[in-house]
Image 1 (cartoon, rainbow, N blue to C red):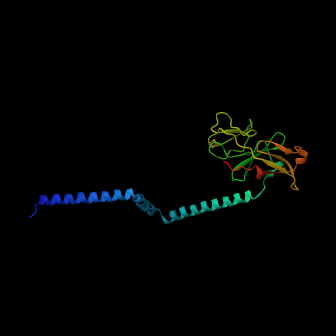
Image 2: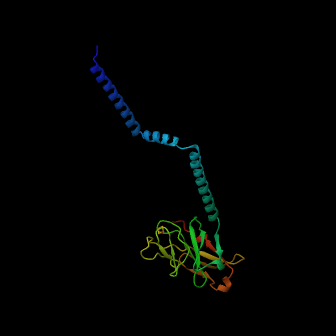
Image 3: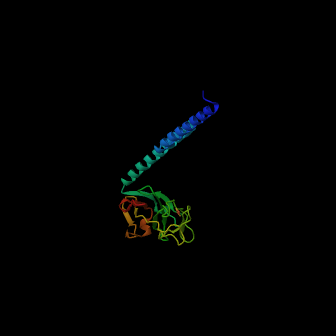
Length: 215
Ligand code: FES
């Protein structure tokens, strides 16, 4: 007959073997990446029905938004020119925002003569949209990390986190009959009249032939 001492040793052995068996199984699952899924399954179970519905509807909303933006971009790329604003609305101290061919923000100002200045509003540091208020030095501010850009040259001032200029966009001024009166390419080369009486009442467009897809 087995003594109490022998029974205790057997019990300890059983507990030890069970524990080792459990540990072995856990390591095996972990090696397959299954344990993580196992835990995430139970994490998911902690969500209430409302939380699950809210996560799902947010996912659907984002998918719809992406689809709408891609459709808008396709529509824009189908146009030779995109309306920005009328020349009379341009200001040297407050830019007008618009969206370019590749769904990036742009800004339109006017220079001292009333002619358009059209630049990208996507900061060349980390891509935030820059502000549209021009200070007394002709600078606009990116609110994210405080880069300042000269609106005439697009260049960041020394000490800004951004090191590259905001690119200029090519544009056209078009009269009420659709005739192009003046164009400027992204390098600043102009063609047409700069007579402000002739340009009065014209509309500002960005042109597809100057559109660049690079960020
Ligand atoms: S994103 Fe504009 S300064 Fe950083």
